[in-house]
Image (cartoon, helix red, strand yellow):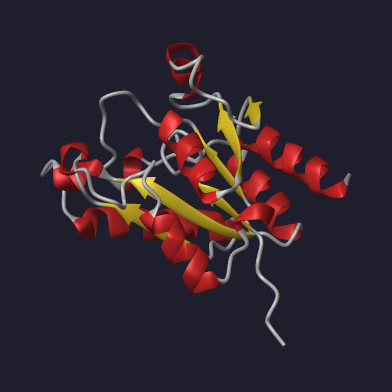
Length: 188
């Protein structure tokens, strides 16, 4: 008998879970600040039985602003903040390449998503992608997930700039509103 597949929420990091300042690459733990709604949103999703994965483009590595160890330190710090709030992540995946490398792991390309799906037995049709950029929405769509664009981070800007091309399943004020929409979707 085949094991049932897991449902998951893939989450962008900067601008979705944590504050992002335009033109600033977060490279120190003192710069990393959770949105106030992030812990509650992730607790809701976790209680609904979703596995939680961060999928993030970290081009600061490829551009030489900092090394992988800096991103690993930031991600460990983020895990610690979330753990104190009662949230455990199932994984953090990131692309270290600069955009001009045209790699397969940089969102909206799907290599990291495919890896998570395979490694963790995720059913894309029962899963969601939440992010603040067009690349996040395209990534989720290419994987066959429902998508939510949050207005935090770059969300408002991307809604204006890509209005004709951007078609998320839902636009939410923030991660908490996105989590509540997911809850409503699966309970109806």
